[in-house]
Amino acid sequence: AKLDAIYRLGVVADYRDTDTAEHAKRVGHVSQILAQALNLGDEFCEKLLHAAPMHDIGKIGIPDSILLKPGKFEPGEWEIMKKHSEIGAKILEGSPSAIIQMAHEIALTHHEKWDGTGYPEGLKGEDIPISGRIVIVADVFDALSFDRPYKAAWPLEKIKTFMIEQKGIMFDSNVIDQFIEHFDEIVLANK
Image (cartoon, rainbow, N blue to C red):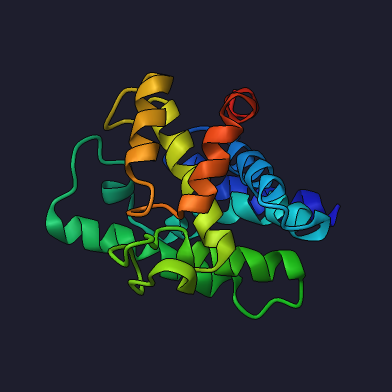
């Protein structure tokens, strides 16, 4: 029951943004595959499976006029949209649950980029927790794999090429190496 309640918390943000609860579930499964491939241990992998779906819970604090906008954001709108990471972290902070603690870390860091150009804190490299480094890969892969109001789904080969090109820029090279090595398994998990 506790895990079900945690999962449903992650679904809340999806229903506001993507009209599907499946995005949260897919990000959790792909994150778990990557964590297993990185040999992060059974306990970590299990927590990540349940914590990763809450990565975008902060989107419940973003106005619909911005969150549901079909086109590109204006600069001011983009600044508001970026606040979802901090909103999510505030929603999840202070819990005694190990899963919610990891979800807090993920909500705050899943838009940080390896080269330090991400948000909200501009963390760089290994200063980004491994949970955030994994979830950004799973989240970007899923976002590119499916239609969104502002773009059509990309073909798998185009996604793979983009992910490789972003190795060491947006993404941790070790995570991308495992993403490529386990690509077929990830594609199956993402359906």
